[in-house]
Image 1 (tube, rainbow, N blue to C red):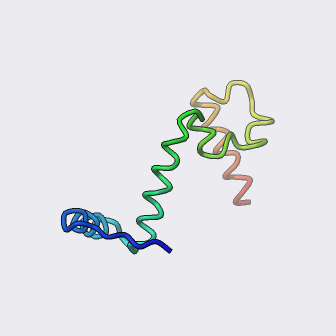
Image 2: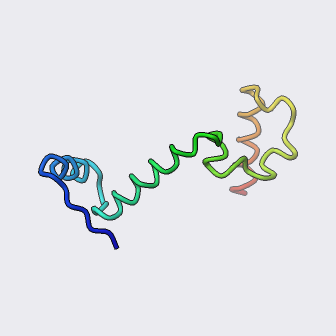
Image 3: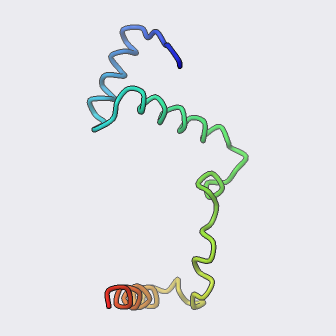
Length: 85
């Protein structure tokens, strides 16, 4: 449990943020802000590491030319066709 006293200006800023955000209460907003700040402090880690690392087995059987637009489009089309059949 944490109790914080805010000056009127900070209280107004918090109210402004809450009015801009939708479906979030003060506690959730403060938790989110703390987590965002905490993540920025981990500067020794790369962006991918901060986000949990590379997905495992995502591209284990991908063709070597998957970065080509036409190959990607065909791979997505094949995946969607297989998924919805």
